[in-house]
Amino acid sequence: MGDRGEIFAVDILKSVLNNVASRARSLGLENIVTVWSNLEVFGATKILDGSLDYGLLTNVLFQNKDPRTIIREAVRMLKLEGQLLIIDWKEGRFPLGPLPQDKVSPQTVRDIVAEFYLSEIASFDAGPFHYGIIFKKIRS
Image 1: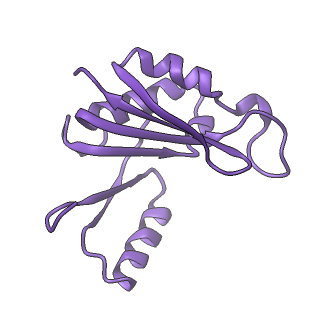
Image 2: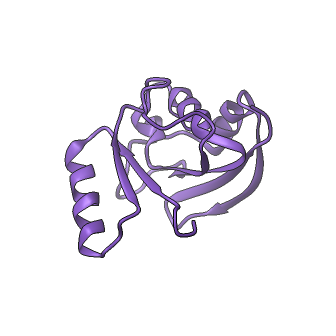
């Protein structure tokens, strides 16, 4: 990130953002910017188009009836060649996490991102209950 890099923490819950800001202050981190937004609304997030090197969507896709809207908003903010990491729940029934019918499969994620000119560069197990996929934006 260098001396001038910023990390944006985006959430719809102000309480979560307040916790992030408080934790950042307690750790002396001055480059974390909290952004209150609804990722389900295209263009609502007050981050410029094509301005992010990296985006991270963690455990959010299952919370939306149309995960495409969240991915579309994340891609909007990515620079060309920027990377998007998606971590979400593996399929199956586990002692914690969402119901199986609410989970978004890795293949569904791949099908969605194909619409937005992203290329998969890696996939991995992100623990016993999660998968991870990294995509690169190859066209605006």
